[in-house]
Picture 1 (cartoon, helix red, strand yellow):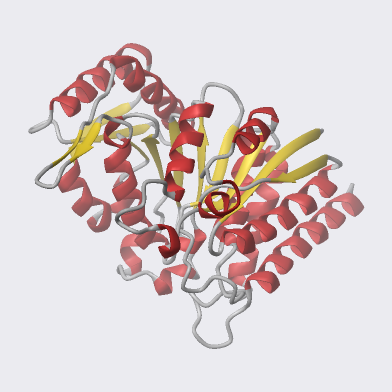
Picture 2 (cartoon, one colour):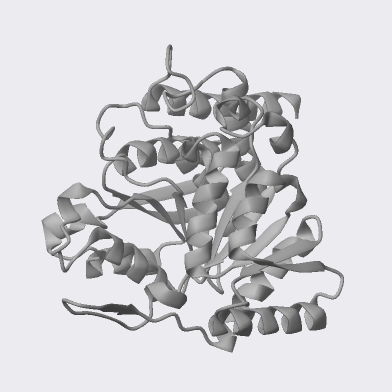
Length: 361
């Protein structure tokens, strides 16, 4: 297979972790006999500095013709003044909107080694395997807004069609997993949530009657996610609630640096990025955890390129790295591995595994 992958390193630690994800993807491509072309472009704060625009047209054009997009992170204090009218995050929101990426996937499956770092009792985390599906292009982030000296307004708006399409995608994932779908809303207060609940109920009952469906209010879900995380399989929710709950779910994994994400639309094109931010306080120091970005590369192989074997090879290499004690500073304070060394270990593991398979064949 030949594929063009757009690489948008972004800001802060984004370029460092993207570089290691590209190394892993290159190793996986070689192992599988594929040819990947990587083309870099600017997004976020660096794009504001260079082009005056957080999403230059050249970047968007590259993403449209690419088979998949690998993204690092955007933002930082340099561009975060309260008076700023152009912000790095606007580029990311616009990219999702322009590419029609309405479903954000965030898997959370804690690795045993990382459980020692989680601030939650290990007995609650053993066996946790959650996939959060967050609606990504509607809701309060994209609604009408205004601000004066004395008041501000942000409108949360959803249509039935928006809810239907992300519900179908989440239900498909639930059917392929353990058959349980948990929908999260605030239907006791918000009309948008009542629309969500009615639509989810109708779609699932009509097209996915084999699924176990439950509804949770977002405030109680925030508690249940920590108190009984093993009870959840696929979690579906709207944009704002999903943004908050997935950051909370990072506690289950022991480190934000371990968690990948995928943003998908109707076709195969997707944007893949670790869930962590740009972490400007550690940028350039070579201590960021690259595993979230590398695992995002695995999701890229699976969802955009249809390369399941190669995706599993990357995931297994990261798991092996954690088992072997290849831990960056977020997981080990003394004797920690650098970003580049950890990424190199994973790339070599992929190569060695492929060679072993080849010899056995």
